[in-house]
Image (cartoon, rainbow, N blue to C red; front, side, top):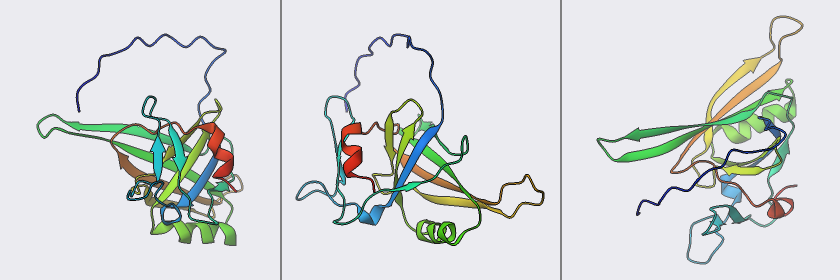
Amino acid sequence: MACTSLVALPRVCADGIVGGLEKVYVIAFKDLKAVASGSTDVYSASTSTGTIVQVGLVSGKTFVEIGLLKNTSGLNEKLTKDLTKGTAFFTQTFTLLLSDLTTANNDFIKAVTNQPVAVILKTRTGKYFVAGLNGLLEVSAIDGGTGTAEGDMAGHTLTFEGISLGVVPLIDSTIISGLIS
């Protein structure tokens, strides 16, 4: 791939930017399907912006919303680049806190423990991003329990890790309603 020229990035002039997530939606990667005949890609992206404009769903399947507690879940990305080997990729780490020790939470943990997932993230700025459409986002750690004191968290923190050749892409907000339950 040829290198592209750089373009100016003006400073954002706004009331401010707030970090964090507002909503999270998850689906098993096996519940996604190819968007075009003869292809294995479960998504298509705009050729001009890279924004995801289509995601293929198996009939009757949707991304399911996972309830969030304030300031408990998020996505981080880290570039790994080796100039001596010519390799470069991003590691994406998504943390999700499941509050309380419930049967529903236990069932969710069992369902995601040994299979890849895709995740739609709505940020507090109102933008939607999607990770895992390449089938490489999986649970890498689960930590939790009852806690020991009254103020301790009772529940589990799930850590999902995946790799991608680029940063997590935006997903067109106009297609979200057709993807979620």
